[in-house]
Image 1 (cartoon, helix red, strand yellow):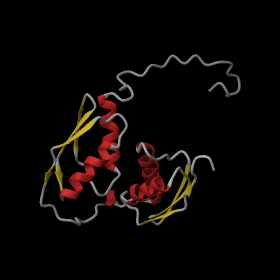
Image 2 (cartoon, rainbow, N blue to C red; image 1 turned 135 degrees about the vertical axis):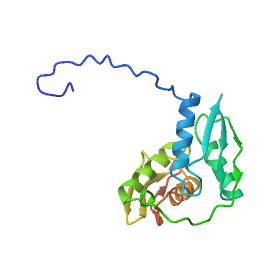
Image 3 (cartoon, rainbow, N blue to C red; image 1 turned 45 degrees about the horizontal axis):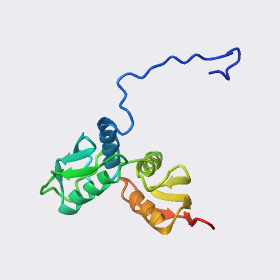
Image 4 (tube, one colour; image 1 turned 180 degrees about the vertical axis):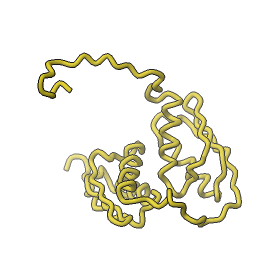
Length: 176
């Protein structure tokens, strides 16, 4: 606002009430829920509880693999000390019909990709350019190593609505 004509200074006295502090249990729970929301290989309806940095997952998984993948996504969130997965494997149809809300447009997919990369401790959306056309995600930028580039591929391809990934990231090793 200080850059508006006629404004000489701004005295910001806004206070955020009841905002969770970074790495508090509430903050961690929100980050885990957001991470699970974007991945088609896990159930977005997973219940997430956090106490002293230990995440407890409850709900239904369609397979043991989905249950284990949910654990891995939760473990990768900053501040998570451990994960207790109490999810049960249920007999759910593998390909339920897609609802209107699940049919995502390209802008939504791009936003989800950026968020997923920001939430993941081993990747950065800040140094990547992301473009989505008809569900095909193109990523450009720098990766610290081939493992990071591969991880970006894995994370992005698991997001709802992504048909394929064109990873054009270049690998830059330290000292070069």
